[in-house]
Length: 187
Image (cartoon, rainbow, N blue to C red; front, side, top):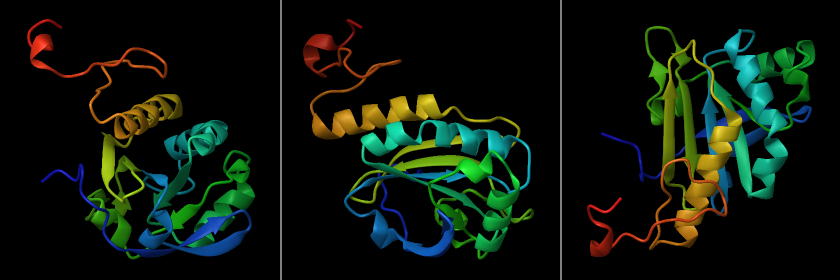
């Protein structure tokens, strides 16, 4: 079963965020756009490049009213240690959720059970708590924050304009489509 358009399941987690441990739950997401950015593990190779790329684009996401939550099955203590020891991770200003119980990873169906780590999964959640975008990559393939930003803009556009759709490679400000009988077979 696809998780698209389903409401996220309840969770409670501790995050490392701006030098503090904070509690986060699904209730904190209501009324805002959110990204859950799952990655396999702290102190690895592809993961810091992705998290750094997200940080490089974080202000653009914030301008759209989007909060980013990176998530791994590591503890919040491990997140702090990684933050304190890595130049790239030390720059992160978005919350790093800890999922040592695997609850969040199971809720989003990205847990690799036999390894106890999460797949490289990205989920965009709308202000109603429903998943609007899902992206899964193999563990050795990194993601692109600018492409994710484009997808978020498209999701926000169609939410605000429910009678329109965004075609392939749509960029903000470009033409959209209004589905109708007149378009059938003409694209």
